[in-house]
Structure formats: C-alpha cells, structure tokens
Image (cartoon, rainbow, N blue to C red):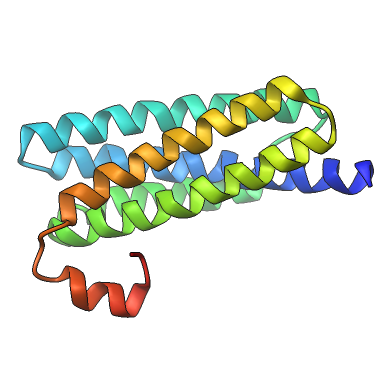
Length: 163
C-alpha cells in the first residue's frame, strides 16, 4: 500500500536525518582524538559523507512533504556531541568498533528506505538511497579493517555481535 510505504519512508528518513547528525559529530570528535594520520583522514572523510547524507535525507523529506523531528534532532545532537568528547577518554578501539557496527546497521536501513522509495516509484530517491547504502558499507569496511587485528575484537564480537 503506497500510503504505508510513504509513512515508512518518512520515518526512516527522519531517523536517518537525526542519526547522521549524531554520527557526524561523533566522528568529528573521533578524528580529533586519533593519532594515526591515515585513520584521521579516513574518519574526516566519513564525517563529510555523513553531512552529505543528512542533506540528502532532508531533501527527500521535503519532497515527501515532511520535516525532521525536532525532539529527535536535539537528542541525537546531544548523543553525537557526547560520543565525540568520549572518544578522548575511551581509548582507540571501542569508538572504532562501534562506529563500524553502526555503519553496518545504516547500510541495511538505507536499503529498506530504498525499497519503500521504489514502491512509491521515486526512482531518483531509490538510486540515491542505494548510493548512500553503498557508502555506509564503505564506512563499515574502513572500521572493520582498522580493528581487524585488535586483541579485544574476539571478546567484543561475542558481546556486541558485529562480525
């Protein structure tokens, strides 16, 4: 049913819009806390792409006649800023691990949104959402490579289930 697809797509875009805000601010703190210059540059690039995704989400919300949810935006702004600061005290591994795990979830979220856009015959939106999903997968792979040989990875995987 097209009405349901529209409502589902709006909800995912609203959630993603706020989520990208949190991610961008968390990554800003993250790259500032990292010593390795290659990792720093990689995370800076990811931050910039999260801001782009946020703008794309806003654009499609406008096309659908919807807006971001103000309360959720405030909550996720706070989460992102807090995580960005915590990167300076939590050590290197956990921000890297959880960033990769989050990006994995984002990949699937954008695929689901794309499915709804396709159902609504929003072909340009579908294509953009699939591109964003692919970019989120690239982000996940970056973080996966960075933590691949860390001694805490096997134990952390058991508890938090990101393979």
